[in-house]
Amino acid sequence: MVHILRFADRPPSKSRTIRFEGGEYGAAVSFFAVDIGPGEGPPLHVHPYSETWIVKRGKGRFTAGDEVIEAGPNDILVVPPNVPHKFLNVGEDRLEVMCIHDTPVMKQRNLE
Image (cartoon, rainbow, N blue to C red; front, side, top):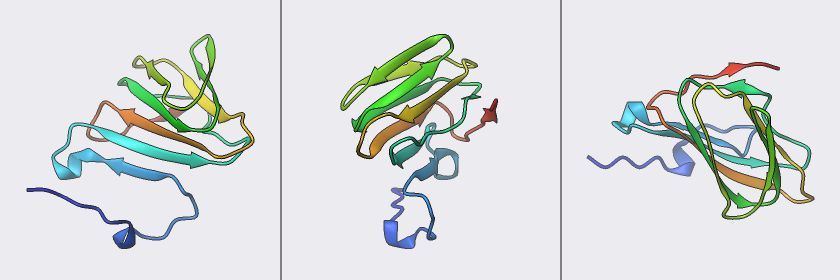
């Protein structure tokens, strides 16, 4: 069975970011489709699984463990399980990032 989650059917949100957990739909992955303004980003946190970031638009500063990397459109970054990480929009425009979680149900522990 194919599932379609139409934009018009999702409840309204203050955030432009879309959260999808695949387990409910038989998918083994989950994701955040992040869309944030300058100076915004999630706090430092960890997951018990890997996370892959694909920058679609803008410029971000990505921190993973002791590494700090600036990335832009079409750059891909992979963070191993249990490595503290975060990112920040350091550009003048919006930052759009696909945050792919290697799990059907997301688990996150904030450190900040």
